[in-house]
Structure formats: C-alpha cells, structure tokens
Image 1 (cartoon, chains in turn blue, yellow):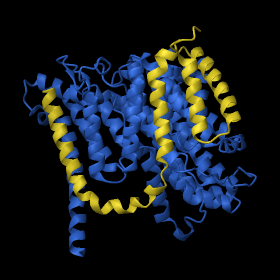
Image 2 (cartoon, chains in turn yellow, orange):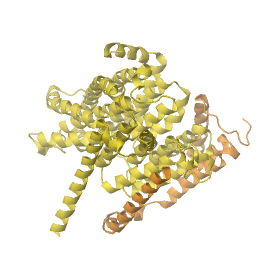
Image 3 (cartoon, one colour):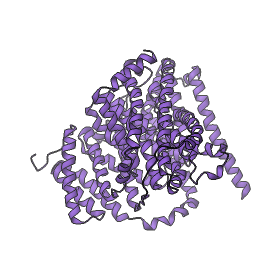
Amino acid sequence: MDIFSGILFGFQTILEPSNLFYCFIGVFIGTLIGVLPGIGPIGAMSILLPMSFGISTVSSIIMLAGIYYGAQYGGSTTSILVNIPGEASSIVTCLDGYQMARKGRAGPALGIAAFGSLIGGTFSVIALMFLVLPLAQAALKFGPPEYFSLICLSLLISIYLARGSFAKALIMILLGLILGCVGIDSVSAIPRFAFGCPSLYDGMGLGQVAMGLFGISEVLLNLERSLDRTIFQTRVKNLFPNVQDWKRSIGPITRGSLLGFLLGILPGGGAVIASFVSYTLEKKISKQPQTFGQGAIEGVAGPETANNAGAGGGFIPLFALGIPANAVLALLLGALIIHGVAPGPTFITQHPEIFWGVIASMYIGNLMLVLLNLPLIGLWVKLLKVPYRILMPLILLFCLIGAYSINNNVADIIIMILFGIVGYILRKYNYEPAPLVLAFILGPMLETAFRQSLIMSDGQFSIFLERPISAVTLLIAGLVLASTGFSYYRKTKAKVILE
Amino acid sequence: MPFLIGALLFLTSFYLLGKFFLKKTETDKTTGEEKGQINYRKIGLVLASLFFFALLLETLGYLVVTSLFFILLFRSVGNRWRTVFVASVLAVFITYFGFTFLGVKFPLGILKF
C-alpha cells in the first residue's frame, strides 16, 4: 500500500463514527489531564488501558494516542494561566507564558501555543508517515541479534538522556529489567521470582505497575504539599496572535517542529526533552536573549511546538520496529500486545487499519484539539478550581477499579498499591520512574531476543558482533556509554582540581 | 541462563545502590528542611483506605466498600460531613453505572445486587 492510498484508507477508518468518537474522547481526556496537575498522561493511559479491552483495537489505540498528544496541549494552558505546569513537557512554557499572562497577553500566549502545537503535531505526523514505511522495510531483515542490540541501544540512550543522575537512571533501568523477569520464563517455562504466589506466575501487568508508579504515587506526593492555586483573574481575550507575534514565532515554530521530531525518535527523549532543548536553542540564537523569562513569545512558541512534534516522532520506532521510545509509548505497546497485535516490522502490512487509522486520527485529533482548546478555554480554567480534595479520591478510585478490572483479581490491586508506595519513595529521592517502566516492558523482549540469538548461534556470543547491523548498533551503544563515562570522569576531575 | 541474568542484574543494582548510599551524605542536607512539613498522617490514612478497599472488596461488594472508601477519603482531607455524604453517594452511583456500562464486573458481596 503506498502512502496515498494508505492515508485515504486511514481517513476511511477514522471517519467511522465510533472511531471518531473515541478519538474525541482521547483528546478530551488528554486535555483534561493536561490541565489538571497531579495526574499525567502515563497515569491516565494506564487507568484507561484495562477499560479499552472492551472496544476494538483500532479505537483503543486511537484513544490512547489521543490522550498522549492531547496532554501536550492541555499542559500549556495551566502553565500560562496559573504558572503550574500540567505536564512535565510544559515546564518551560511557564517561564515566558506566565509572564505574558501577567502582562495581559494571556490570549496570544494561549493562541500561539495552540497553533504551534497544531503545526508541530501535523508536521510530525507527515514526517512519520514518510519515514515509517522505509524503516519497516529495512527492519524486515532484522533477526533476534539485531533486536537485542537495538534494545540495548535504546535503553542506554534513555539513560543518557534522563534528567538528573546517571547512576539513578541506571538503577531504575536495572530494576525494571528485574521486574520484567517475574513470571513464567518464556523459553524454559520455569517460574521466576514468583515466590509460590499464583498471581505472580503471569508476571506483573504493565497496567498495575504503571498505575502504581504514576497514579497512586502522584496522589501521595500531592498530599504532602497543599496545592494553593492562584488563578489568574483576567478575561482571556484576543486569542489570535497579531501579525507581529506571528513574525516572531515563525522561526521558533519551524525549528521546534524539526527539533522536536528528531528528539522524539530518540529513545528516552520524547516531548519533555524536546521542549527543554527548544527553549535553550531559542534563547541562544535570539537577538535579545534578555527578554526570555519576561514574556518573550518565542519562549512559548518554540517549546510548545517541539513537545507536540516530539510526541509524534516517538511513534516511528514503535510502529516500524515495535520498540517504544519512552514510557508512554511503552504503554501503547502494552495495549497493542494485550489486544493480540504483535508490533514489529510486519505490523503495517498485517494491520494497515491500525497504522493508517492512527495516523489519520492524529490529523483529525490535532484539529479537534485546537477547537477544543481555544474556544473552550474558559471551561478548562474553571476546571482548575475543582479542589484537590474532591479530585483525589476520584483519581484513586479510578486506579483501583482499573487495576481490578484487568483480571478481576484483588491481587492486582495489592500489587498496584505496593508499586504506589515504591513510586512515592522513589520520587521523593529523585528517582525517575519512567525509565523503570520502559525497561519493564523492554526487558522480556530483550531477554527473548538474547536467548533466541544464542540458540541460533549455539551459545556463541560472537553472533552479536558478526552480523553487521547488530555490530554497528552495539558500537554506537558503546560510544554512548563511553561518552557518558568520559564526561563523568571530566566532571569529577574538575571537581578534584577545584578542591 | 535466566538465573544468570537475574543474578547479574541483582549484583549490579546492589553495587550501584551501595555506591549511592556512600555518596548520599552530602546531598541529603538540602531536602532535610522540607521534611518537617509533610503530613504523614494523611498519607497513612490514604494508604490504609487503599488497602482496606483491596482487602474487603470481595467480601463486602463494590457498593458498600466504595461508599465507605469515599466517606473515609473525603472526610480525611477535610470536607464537611454534608459534602462528604452527598459527594460519596453521587460518586459511588455514577462510577458504578459508568463502569458496569463499560463492561466491568464488580463483586456483589453481601448486598445481592
């Protein structure tokens, strides 16, 4: 199927009323959780994951994807109006967006954020469409050794790109790999780490783990501090940025689209990193860097475009190789697997309706989001006034029911609560749970690929180096590791000299 | 082979953890001040109600447990009693019908419906 007939087919799929409806639900929930601080896209997607079992595969993937990119829109609203980032990916929007709002320019700030997001989102979908097909073609030649190397590489890059400490990210990855081992081993059928507990024989579900780490622990963290929100009391007007605003934003939006898309492809990157890098870049090349932080529209346009473009770029490795680039996409992969769809190079030819349907839904969804966000901005602002003490029990109940409904098993709830406590402690000590979830889903894939390769080669480890693609990938992985080690070494050396 | 991988992972992570705790002494000071304000009672209460929900769900049934769960939670974060009851009852029924509509089966427990 070539691109043109593919996209037609995709629109045919998305224009079915039920898919359109789920697409709307997805972007709506996405905006909602983007606006509400205290629950992010990972939490919301893991809560909705078990509830999507009842609907068709296409609809559920469309809905979950909608939550992901919808959250990038919603997050900007709170950043600009309340100075609280709804999502991690809109933290930098606070810097200039809130200042713009204080100067009475909340309207253009929201407007440019929405339009930038639309442009970035659409750009990344188009680029995605053109890149996935050749990549999937190439990936058909991949065997287990190549997969093993690729997964190793993506785990390493995600450590490299992680915020904060390198060692902490590494620990999270290793912990995730161990947790992924729990359950009956796929090659020899021996239960591992199950401790005789029948509920653990199947392994721990992604849903329970993610909900605990992101849903419950988030609530516990928020209970610690009282969230007083001072909502900006101005009427939001002039949502359409004027000509001068556009002139200043066109550069940041173009650069943001490209940058976000490229960073989105990298494992562990995605929307968050894209927005930070874009802000730094705009500040560096700006002729008046001193205006940044005081309400420069470039500082809103760039990152907001980049985070949406980044959200789209991440779909490339997922659709072409079946390897998720970050924790959110790992959840999407989980959803695909639960629905009985094997992602990988053959995914597009075997399930064209899912691939093209999701792509088309991104066009439609991005449009829906602009319509949902700009005229209805007042509604979202009002929603911020719902006190957390009402919201909190509801979020918890959704998590509980979500965990229960996966298998109708109370043990799943207990697992989730335990992970909630673990996640709470981890976050308190600045460990990021996102790499853990990524490793948790990649772990079993990594292990299977590793062992299949060894079976292929009769236990010779050299198979990973004899095959060219695998060797090159491992070489890059080695370089990434070496460069991290080197910069760490230089830092420590500098410190020692200083002292 | 699986045990080899497992053992390797355990070793590396323990090594890293150990290394980390040794370094920890300097960085801990900055977070020390914030710790005084944390409301551990609230967190304990929430956790207790979560476990309460999980353990009693199958014996008491969804409607009873969820009502109690909501009453406990709404009250624990300091709402007035009237809001507590109205909100709990509303939330229980809305979620019950919402989720059964989505195809989730709840345990019936002592109430036979």
